[in-house]
Image 1 (cartoon, helix red, strand yellow):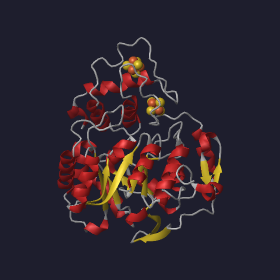
Image 2: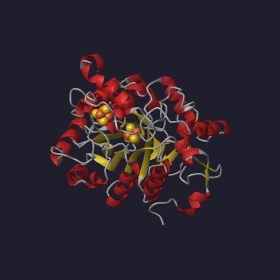
Image 3: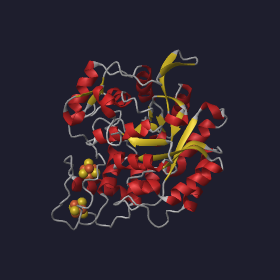
Image 4: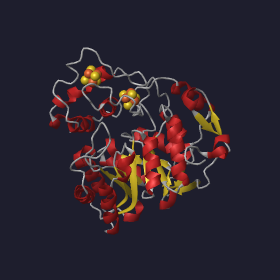
Length: 401
Ligand code: SF4
Ligand code: SF4
C-alpha cells in the first residue's frame, strides 16, 4: 500500500533507532539524482538534487530569508553557490522581498531562483479560510510581491501556511494561481505547511495541482514518522520537496540541539527531501551550511547526539494541534506558541508581533481563568508561555521593525 507507507523496500533500508522512531538511513542509501557540482571559482563541490518534476537542480541547502534583511549576507549567499531564496509576501511586512529585490537587481535572471508565498485570511483555530479569502486578494498580493522583488515572475509561488486538508484545494486560491501562472507570474505551484503537515501533504498530492511542497520536518517532531511517510508519497508522485524548520532551537546550541549541522544532515539523509531552506542570519551560520552541503553524511557521533536529543522534550511547539479546542476562550494556542518560537528561537520580534496582532485576541488574555485545562502533548506550560508572548502587543511597532 503506498498511501500511508514508504513501501517495504524503503522500510528495509531504514534503521529505526531509539525514541520516537528516529531513523537513520544506511550508508549505502543514496538518492539517485544526487550529484556533486563544482561551484565556480570557489573550489567547492556541493551536493545537488533535482526538485521533483520542476527539474530545477538545487544545492541541498538554500536560504530561508525570512529572518534576514542584511543585503550583504544575501549577496554572499548567492555568490557562495546557493541559488534559491525563499521569502513570503508577509515577511517583515514586505521589507524582506524589497531587500531581496535590491540584491538581485542587475543579476542575470537565470542565476537565481525565487520562491515566495501568498496567504489569505484563515480561522486560526480551524485552519479554514474566512471572509476576505478571495481570488482577487491573492492576485493583488502577488502583484505587490513582484513589484517589491522587481521581477516579472517568481520561480515557485506557494499558497502559504496551510493547516487543513480542505484549504489545500480551496478554489479561490487554485483559480488565482491558475490565472497567475497563465499570465507568466510564476513557474511552479507550491504549498507550505508547518502545522498538521501529514494531512496537508496528502491533500496536496490528491489535488494533482502542486509541483512543490514546503514542509516543516525535523527529528524532534512528535509525528515525524507520519510526516516522513507523507513526504515519501509526495516525492514518489513527482512533487518537489523542500524542508523547513530542520533545526529546532535554531543555530544556537541549546539543551536540545547540540549540533545544528547534524540536525540539517538528518533531514537531508531522507532522499525524498530535495532541498532545505534554513533561516540563517549570520556569516558563521552560512559557513555551517556550506560545510554540510559538501558532505551530508552523518557520522557516528552526530547520530548518537541526535538519538539523545530526540528523547528530550524540545523547547518549542511541534504544531501537532492536539491542544486545539481545549482552551475555554478558544485561543489559537498553536499560533501563539509559534509566535513564542519566533521570539525565543528565531529572535524575530517583528514576525512574532505581526502574528500576534493578526490573531484578534481579547485584551485580558488568560486573565479570567483560575485553572488552565489546556494539556500540551509535549508538556509545555501553555498558559505561562501565552501570557509571556502576548506582551509583545504592547511594544510600539517602530521599536521592533
Ligand atoms: S488560561 Fe489561557 S490558555 Fe488556558 S484555558 Fe484559559 S484562556 Fe485558554
Ligand atoms: S502547544 Fe503542544 S499540543 Fe499544542 S500544538 Fe504545540 S506541541 Fe501540540
